[in-house]
Length: 441
Image (cartoon, rainbow, N blue to C red; front, side):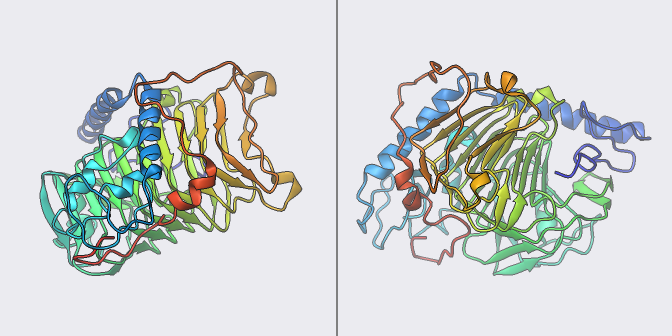
């Protein structure tokens, strides 16, 4: 994130973003009250989403991974909670095995909401709501979006499961501001959000973003933009993030192909929590994932994020992720092409790295997987950063810190995670996938 200009100024005409780091702006009292109410409501949801026993969540995920990899992945028939399948199932990890083997996935779209694992496991998205079909890729009216467009869908008040009539390229003229209880489901269509602004998940809850191509995102100028059916106002210039998660909870990002955004690929900031990022394919970017935007915002201590089954591919430089304050579970990801470092942070985040594969670049100065910023060793040596069952290749090494006798609490589902040697299989289908009707994905 290039400073905090947009993230901390998220402002409408007369709207000041409510944040400890917000700037002072001239605002109308009506709009200030609206955003204060939204911020307070989001904070309450975030505190409710915060898990006081985060290690039980990591243990649950490890248990699912263990069970998934015990199965014979060469089999063409696998059980899916009573659903009988007749075609080959290519799912290779427990999230995908929950839904991809069902040939009737189009009729059972909302089943996806039952498949998240990790800290975002309770995300429901638009489950239980209506199906909204996007038929028009245009994005021409920011104040009164045209029915049938993605912008019109995401501002509706009720829960919606948003799908696409056919493949399309959507160029967003301004950031896409979403409301709570929404799923954007790109299965069955090749949907590219590119060459314009990105997605903003701000002060909301229960959002699923699934099976999209998001790339070549640009900073937008800002202006009058509708944020809900009953409110619009003036936004400041956006930074150019692919997906910005700001003060939100219960968010699941899954099977997204992302590259080449002007700022970050995914930012998770302002005490967002209960987030899972899974099955994504990231390429061609410098500063990829930012979890916490500033060392001064201590409320990020409630941030809990699971990063799993992702493939970090060609052309990535750093921040996979870069963390502050919170707890980040980095498990069974494949880091094949990082150029500077993979996992970094400042301000005492807790990082548990399990069963990842880290392939170091040829540069002899970039063999270390980890990077600590803005702290002397006398300080960061107390941060809890642990590596378990990671596979280190081409000279890669992970510098652990914290009490060497520290043991993460165990729960009833604790099973040692699968080692990094299995990561290429677990992440085989990372990124957006081509799903066809009446066939398993």
